[in-house]
Length: 536
Image (cartoon, rainbow, N blue to C red):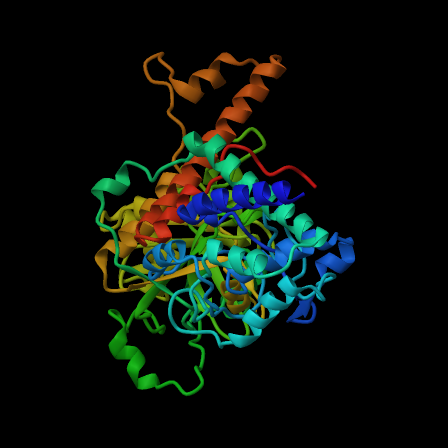
C-alpha cells in the first residue's frame, strides 16, 4: 500500500508541476458555482450542487481544492505578480500558510468544469485535510480588492497547496481516494493540452500591424449611467415603432432624455463631450471591455463585449465578435435577415450587405426593433457616445445624409441585433467569480475605436466569393455541393461553422493579446476549439 501511495503522490506532483507552469492549463481547473442568479428575485441564491447531485466525498474534496486554488473564484484568473510568485512556490518545499479569499460569487452561465460541486458542502469535513483547507480559508476572508480581478490575494500555488493538503495529514483510505481524484483531474488537463495544442487559433495577422490600445485589467466595471437599453432607449424606439406607420419617419428622430445621475453635476456634461449641441449625453472617460473566460461555454464562448451601461440595478453590453449565422453556417447580411420595409431606409440602401452581429441574447421585442447601429461617424444628432469617436444610434436621417454626401463611410457602421443584459448586482457577481476579465482603456486613445471595429470586422468577414470562374476553400465546397448531396451539404455546413468559430476565437485571442502577460496566455486555453461541448 505504501508503494501505491508514493506512486500516486509522485504522479500528482509531476503533473501539478507541469500544470502550474502553464497558465493556459492552469485555467482549465474550475470549480462549481456556489451561487446562481435568480432573475425573478433579482438576487443571487445559494446553491449546493454536491448535495443535489449526491456527489462522492472525493469529488467534493476536489471541488473545494480547486476553489481554494482559485482564491474562492469559480474560474482561475492570473495576476501580474503570479509569475514571480509561482517560481518561489515551486522552489520552496516547506509549508507556508497562504492567504486566500472566500469571495464566492458565480456566473449564471454554464461552464465546462468537470470537477464541479458546491464548496459549501463537505461530506468529509471531519478529516485533517478538510480542516487545513477551512483554516486557510478562514484566515484570509478578505474583502474584494482593487487590483487584478476582484480578490486581493494571488491564486495559490498548486504544488504548495498539494503539500498542505496531503503531506501534512496522516494517510487514510479517504486520503487515497482524494489523491486519485486530484490525479485524474490533473491528468485530464495535461492530456487535453497535449491533444489540442495544434488546434489553438492565434490572433489574426492584422493584429501584428494595427496599434494596440492601452488596456488595463481592473477589478470591477465602472458605472455608466447615460444609456439604458432596457428602459429609456428601448421604450422610446418601441413607442415610435408602434405610433409611426409611415416608414419615411426616422427612428432617430426620437430625442432621448438624459438620465439624472444621483450626485452628478449637469454643468460638467457639456464640457466633457466633443459635440454638446448634437447629443445630450456625456462622453465616458473610459472604454470598458469584457473578455469571456476560456472555460465559459454556451452563448458567450470566446466573446468580447463593450460595456454600454453599468449601474447597481442593471448593466448592458454589446458582443463585438459574434456574427449571425443560418443553419448552414453562412453569415447573414442585413438584406437576408431584416424586413427592410419595416426599418429605416439606411439599412436597405447602404447597409444591406453588412453582416448582422449578435449583440447578445436579450431583444427589445421583434428582431427588426432590436437592431442598433454602432458607428464612428461624428456630429450625428442624438447619438449616444461610448468614447470620443464611438457612438450608438442617433438620427438615422443624418447618418444617411452623411453617407450620401460622401462625408461618412458605411464601413464605419456596425449593425447589431440585441444586447447582453444583467440584473441587480449580477455583473459584479460574475466578475468576482472570474467569468469575465474587465479591461479598461482611455476613451481618448485613437487605437481603441479602431481595435473595437477591427474585432467585429474580422469575426464578421464573409468567406471568399467565386471570381472569374474560380473558387477556393469553403466557397468551392459550397458550389460543388448540390442540394441532393446530403453528405456534401453536411460537410460544407461543418466547414463553415468551423471557419466561423475560428474567426470568433481569433478575435477573442486578439483581445487577450492586447492585455499582455500573464492574461494573454489564457487565450491558449481553447480546448477543444473546433468541437462544440457535448450536450448534457
